[in-house]
Amino acid sequence: MRFLVFNGSPKNQKQSTTMQYIMFMRKMFPDTTFEIINVGSQISRLENDTQYFHEIYQSISAYDGIIWAFPVYYLLVPSQLKRFIELLFHHNSQKVFENKPVAAFCTSIHFCDTYAINYIKEISEDLVMKFFDTYSAEMFDLQKEKERDRLTQFTDHFIRFCQLKTYSSRKSLPIIQNNLKIEISNDHNLQIKTTQKILILTDETASDLNLMAMTGYFKNMFSSQIELFNIRDFGMKGGCLGCIMCGYDFTCVYNKTDSFQMLYTEKVKWADIIIYAGSIKDRYLSSLWKQLFDRSFFHNHTPMLSGKQVAMIISGPFRQISNLNLLFQNYFEVQNVNLAGIVSDDTDSADAVKNDLINLAYQIVKMSEEKYCAPKTFIGIAARKIFRDDIYCKLRFPFVNDYKHYKRLGYFDFPQKDIKNKIINSVLSFLTNFPKIRKSIYQKGYDIGVIQPFQKKIQSIEVKK
Image 1 (cartoon, rainbow, N blue to C red):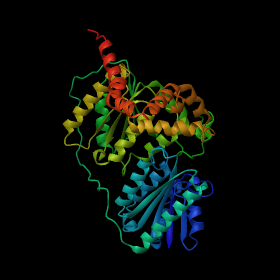
Image 2: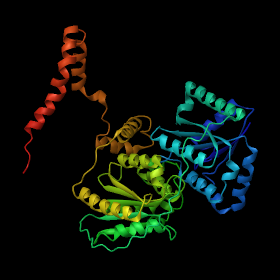
Image 3: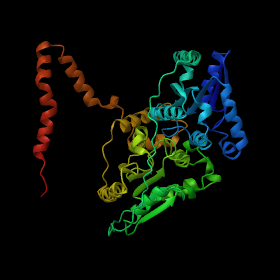
Image 4: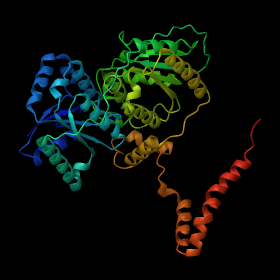
């Protein structure tokens, strides 16, 4: 069997943690070829050298299967791999991938790896490939015998999958493009006045007509204190390299070659409200937006947007990509900001978009003035706990500044330190060994211990008139 491995890491196979797992597969299956193409580290060449891109394209038919291999960067694949996927569609490369068996392999600390897994699976199906499965490894799993055995089993199953050629049907629905044209005239008398400073970050180009119409309409609803900034003007020289040089003092290795960190920090610090605006490319925003999110990792796992209001204006089939909706909800919860809403042109009429933009404008200003932040859901709380545990122990180095900030912000809130509840639970657990007491506790204890304190609190509250 011959497999082609697309290495999506910005590092080559000698430097990449992800690629060490592929090297392990090579060793365990010496009769199987694992040919590696470093699409992540060679993305500039792939963009500019059409002949080289077509050489890769033409070689794909010689392989029995494809393996996507990548680390999880900011809830998705790295921006370099995202750009490679865009190039595949740009060059109409779907035909060569048709019916080709494919598997995916990723490494992470299991922070939101599900979004990256869903994305690469759906992209594979959009390329009409026959998707097997994804193996998501914790970055240090290769050091554990049990996990090495598990990976060996996975690889063996994929080989059998390719040999049998009995493929399962597609699990995701193909995207249907909405050709709705948004032409919103600024015929309203809305001039929302606020002292809140509003920043619209967009990557729009002259071809993004709907996006420009929506951001323009939103901007014109405000009398002042609003700036529209195109992220192309940040002058980013490249995507995140995964070098984690920023772990010590939040200083990006690119600081010597571009001014992204300084300019981005200034813009974000200035704004009370940030609107993220972009057009969907495949099943995410553009690779440029992904590059920005990846590069913002210079602040590591510490929420740099904390306390702000955010919203999104998206052009494209947003409603058809549930994975994307959850991804952004998760991202903003981790950033400790309030996501006031997402407006998309993936709807029935321009009037509906217009009304959504008006509602968003009023709502986000009110929320910002009141400093409202919605309570976190499972995805935000679970992510915080993963970071808390790993920064406290395994990742304390190299993420030195993360540890300092987590300690200062009180993030190391381990439940083992709650002495009061440990004592209460120990006493109650002991008492339940006696049948009569156990019956009384389970029948009446809940009302007494849980409900009554709520009732007393409600009764004690005086409502301001």
